Length: 121
Image 1 (cartoon, rainbow, N blue to C red):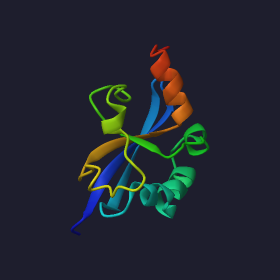
Image 2: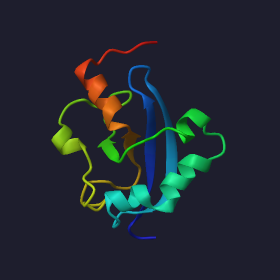
Image 3: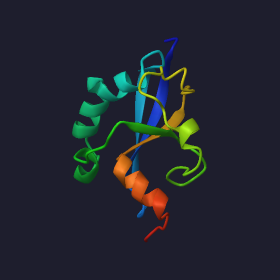
């Protein structure tokens, strides 16, 4: 259907340990706002109830911040102004297209990692 896309959301549980899980969403309307995409029952309910997704990912308190997926393993730490998707923007206006990857994480975790971008294995 026109205006719908496949979007992969990387659920980032830990930046330091590079702990993330990709979750694929089909039939995403690109004409909805970023906030509507997050708050829509599909995204939050899916994360909480998706079979095969480990409980630490299902129960984590993600906040409403998305980034474009770049060639970083988890995400880029540069150009926050360009990479953070704004709540009032439609996904299309924000640049999301079919087969786009975005990250979903806690703002506090990102701030701590950005201040000291070290990884632990």
